[in-house]
Amino acid sequence: MIITFKHWSIMFPAASLLTTLLLALSIAASPVEVRDSPITLPVARRLNTSGGTINLLQHDQSRAAALKSVGTSSVGRRAASIPVTNEAVSYIAEVGIGSPATTYNLIVDTGSSNTWVGADTAYVKTSTSINTGKPVAVSYGSGSFSGTEYTDTVTLGGLTITAQSIGVASKSTGFTGVDGILGIGPLDLTEGTLTDEQTTTIPTVTQDLHTQGKISDIVVGVSFEPTTSESVTNGELTFGGTDATKYTGAIAYTPLTTTSPASYYWGIKESITYGSTTILSETAGIVDTGTTLILIASNAYTKYQSATGATPDQTTGLLRVTLTQYDALQNLNFNVGSNTYALTPNGQIWPRALNTYLGGSSGYIYLVVNNLGEPSGEGLDFINGQTFLQRFYSVFDTTNARV
Image (tube, rainbow, N blue to C red):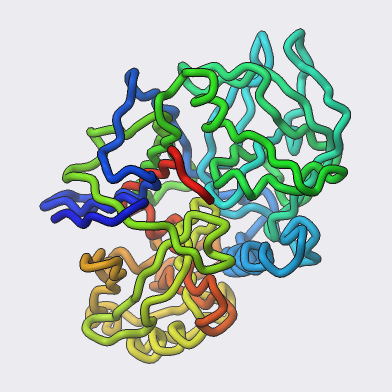
């Protein structure tokens, strides 16, 4: 089943263990054509237990508040004063920087666009390292960093970028156990991150790959898969195209929303139904690799809680259902255009084998849908996070796009 829109690409397979959703941005309504074979980079899903029990909901809600703040002032979330929490559940890519390269474990983030290192492993200067002397800083809600911009050689799988802008952290919070971030969000999110140049943007890694002729289209395919393990390499990034072994179907397009602040990110419009009951009318929101849960506007959350009969768990903050209630769960449907992408009851629950990492009981059933914290109508009314993306393959294509 195929839908054709203008900018984004959405694909639904006839049959697959992972229902496939391609989200790709392009001005031309034509399939992505890659000049050379795309390069894939394995990514590992990791629960950050270095600080003890993971407060997953606090992490995601803090991040959501930071994401929503981007349009509220001239410097957006870079100047936001928001409590930070440590990165909880992340997809990690091994990225080489320098020559010879030092390998850094970086969080894959579509909700930001700066690439930086130094949170854990210190930056190693080599002959390719150039200090620009420019201060750089970003606040994420779930953490922050400040330091100095360098340019250096960056290696992503089999692709090498020369003179790529990176941040080298002199101070960071909320990133215990990882080295920094690989930012693959839209370009405009870098504006103002050079603290003395508030109107300057910084080319992203995908843009520089394209500029230097390493990929013919500014495309990143993202494959996440469900897991019951604390740490496992079960995902991949594909630069310059898609990995056909990860999906079936064909590509169609849909526009990025123009509604702010969702328009700063990979924002789309969708409605959500639980069974046949609408819990969120069509509105703007985002798809985000840096958020773990599926967060929906508070009015939609109240309807979902009532429909499922779930109760908030005092320890984890997540919604909890009994086995009887689980057996009665209906599909949660994400309606984009004329297509419906359904999360089955099993797709709506947190893996029970990982309950104790959240401070929960191994015998409880927790739901992965929770409260965004504010009602709908504010320009960013849902975040389809990792628990959504684990069921759907995604492709982010910024070729010729105006973000």
